[in-house]
Amino acid sequence: MEIIWDRICREDWAEATAAEILPMQQHWTYGDVLSALGRQVRRGEVMHGGRRVGLVQVIGRRFGPLQLSLIGRGPLWLDGLPAVKRAMACRMIARGAGVMVMTPEQGLSGRGLIPLVSHRHQAMLDLRPDRLTIRARFAGKWRNRLVRAEGMDISVRQGVPSQRELDDLLVLDAAQQRARGYRALPACFTRAWAHVDPNALRLYRAIHEGRVIAMMLMLLHRPTAGYHIGWSGNDGRRLNAHQFLLWHVIRDLQGGGYTALDLGDVNVDGAPGLARFKIGTGAIVAPLGATMLVLPTFIRPRS
Image 1: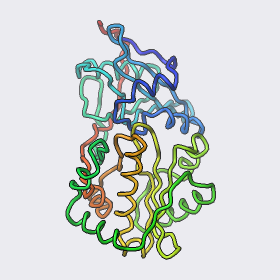
Image 2: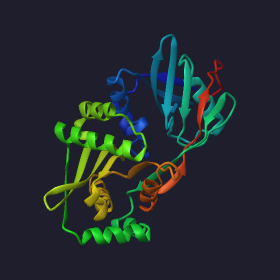
Image 3: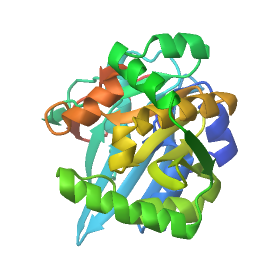
């Protein structure tokens, strides 16, 4: 088993992950965005028996003499590599990475993998079933709110946001975060994403009586899309505009060939209302692996 660094091109990465539920943190665009923000980005191929069995995107940052490397929701495993070999591959990836911290998509344990933070839960909505099946999976209260919203005079406008539209949304989102006491990815990340790949953002706006009452911003990292920012005013909440918008988003993404919508963290303690909204979609809520410190190994395993 060996790790080959920075040889793969974007097209090969996309082809290798086309059939996967691809987390944003392991999409090529995410690496380009972090690189634009001054981070070091390395992309590796895990090779075993002459075959590529995994891919990994590692984000590095230097604090004086200290090198910190992060793997978010990875590596991506492309073949049925046994867990013991996956653990060994992670330790090989850690060679020369300084302090390496990893949050795998699924639980992983073994020598040299030291848990730091217990797992968190992620909501993933499968877009592959037909629309009637997806709608039937909505929780009763969620579906009833959608039905009420469909009876209102609400329209949706969508597209790549202009700079002004993006700035306005980020201001509203910052105020919403302060009011509700939560934190999200910083505005500079969203702006960098818009700069690196503007067509990989899609803004949906709910319009009622000529006014914007709710908005959703999606990050597109094919074949998956991610719910990035959601904002709603008083009228939007009263008219259940978020249910209306998300149902529109689901149909639009399906039409564009996306296979899953990542709704993000489910935090029933810190953000119970948002957690109920995500769970109500019928999304699969599953734990990620624990965040762990990865100790490097310098032993070359047998293939």
